[in-house]
Length: 197
Image (cartoon, rainbow, N blue to C red; front, side, top):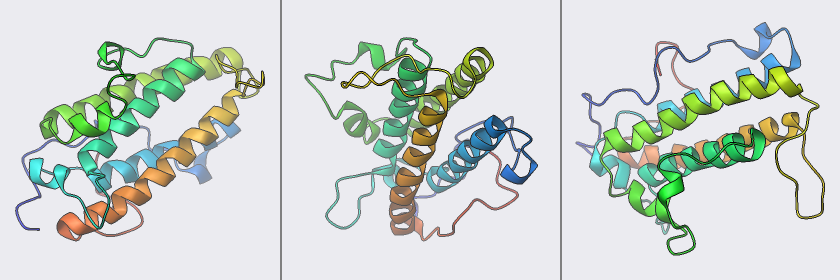
């Protein structure tokens, strides 16, 4: 679809994102964080620079949009890393949402918000997650406990939480891959070297 790419829109994240590759990592924590950052970078590339039309486009029989997907992943960052890993509150905008009354709020509003708003919510969530994860790893290590337990009483480790977050990005980057190709033909497994985010 022509006209869906918006060159004037800012990248989703700042250029200060960590750039350590897994092969350069010295510790297991560095390896996990570098894979998570690589997935975030690919997700950023797949969803970046779109105008309202691009963020609202659907494909096939799915109602999923890139705008909704970006806000959903922002919510997952808050839920999984801020709340369940670090034991913090959801923070804005999530703590003002009645998810019982509107369980698909992030998907619905992701198709209504401006690109700047959609990208800012995700960027803020990622920035917060980075700080919280660094603090949790420093305090608890990878074998330390998360701040919640499963219904059966088991408590996942910090390592498990990071691996699950990596899996979440991998799954949703696949969704973004299909949607983005339908919007403007962008394809590829990873962001080009010169992509800044």
